[in-house]
Length: 224
Image (tube, rainbow, N blue to C red; front, side, top):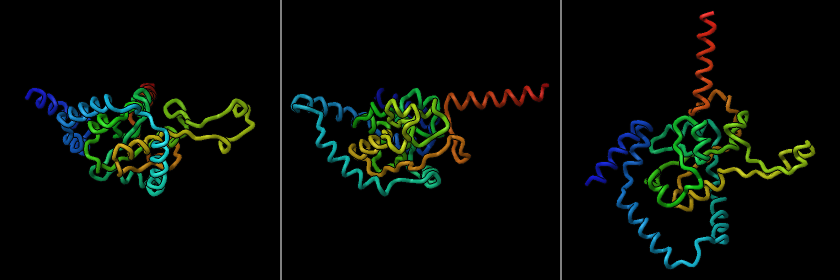
């Protein structure tokens, strides 16, 4: 009884912070289901020889490649879909980078924390539309969205261009994992966009600092 009251209290606070649409999703999460999942995995740990299977992962990746091809969205479509019911924007970068700067309204789960339980707790309804993005979708802010391009030393001397290098965007493993955990309504931002694009709205400590500096500059100009 006490657990249920506590759980509902947490949901109420999160609904006030994150908004009604997300609250409708998370209210379906059930702590009893979480307990069942924990028990299941504890039992499985006693009987499986290994939980690492490269071959199976690559097979999954090939399946996702076909699925993902029709779920890449331009920025306008991405932002329009974000306004639809039962839809969340999921930021899977580090907590530090999410706190620093993220798309307005995005929820967060660090990619390294992905598992059946953490995803269920965050997005219990697998029919939820999930929109994803990563560092490699944005330019003009290396501090908040560091490039995930892989370079070799001679690239730093200007002897090669990005066209010759490897992109290691977080979007791809994020997409594969969401699909693998049963989320089949995933869409990915495909565009490379400047953070200065007027269509974008960001939140975070870095954004607050910039806004405060602008306000202070206006105040100072008025005073002078």
